[in-house]
Length: 467
Image 1: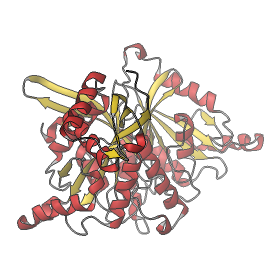
Image 2: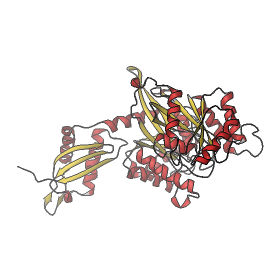
Image 3: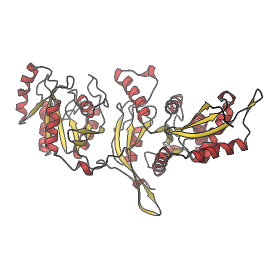
Image 4: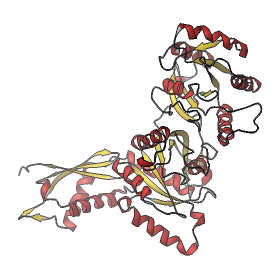
């Protein structure tokens, strides 16, 4: 597998893409969450909360579509003095979203009336030849509905009034979207559930650079300012694994969840940052596999890295550890760095450790291979006969413990779950099994079944043996 085998598939199964754009604080994220059907983007009265593109596959009317939430556009005409750093970065993300969109929802705020910036955004879409619908948000009453007519000066024939808070006008909006997109070949589409991969780590450790390198484009904002990423951003792509004996290899649909940098709760300086932390923790819970980013150079593994690793471990998720900035490690220190990472996170000794450089691309071929291998392990159900044979062989090699004259015995074992790998042991008495022996049985299963990167849960149930 090479770095070129990680190929973007923005239109998995060819669903249309709908981009939501507009100036800051008009309710773009609220509309996105409403159409998706759950809270994905962070909604807050502070402008500039959404900075990256947030993407989610959802059913809109009769069609499946990729919905893309974008950051609030700053100044288009007259980007001169006083323009924030984020304005330029957000604009590049919006331009990228528009480039791959089939339809644009341009959102305005009816309570503010048409503003010069609204005009700039509409004129930009018109000049670029984009097909768009003008959506007037915050139409919470009949009086405000009458104010929608003010937006006629933008030169748009039809304006769709909605209220994301009260869900007014949403049915008409969905109907308008369906009319613009048409019916489409839905019957021929395949929406296989992708492998959900959460990318987690402390702030400014290189998560967004890792995501951009992995998917092959500037998909997420990168800055040396801590806190650049606030939302948990879903990035659909495909992992293509080349096989020597098979042309074309294997294509694995996946979704990367690039999360805000996790830090201690007490250091969440704003409400938005607090919710970013909560969203990152939620991303770990809803992922299949977590990629834990640590620094190979610089600060190395910190106390916060260990805390993040414990969150992943407690959630029972498959994981790999990625040591980023490997290119900055001096030759003689490399073995020491690897040993230090392993010593610092001993409870994840089963996780593959991949050494990468987001700057040069080194190591990213192995990242794809490890993710593909984890997906196969997660989906593999081990037959009960094999589980029993491994447990019996383990007991024959190392005698079970004897407590107060009674010997611990395993009568029967079976695999009950794959994510995490959970096994149920029917035993004579769970209290007779020592912690050391339970760890020995766990390691025996891991070694024989190739469960590298997956947590193993062993549960015991007392069962009287019938002779």
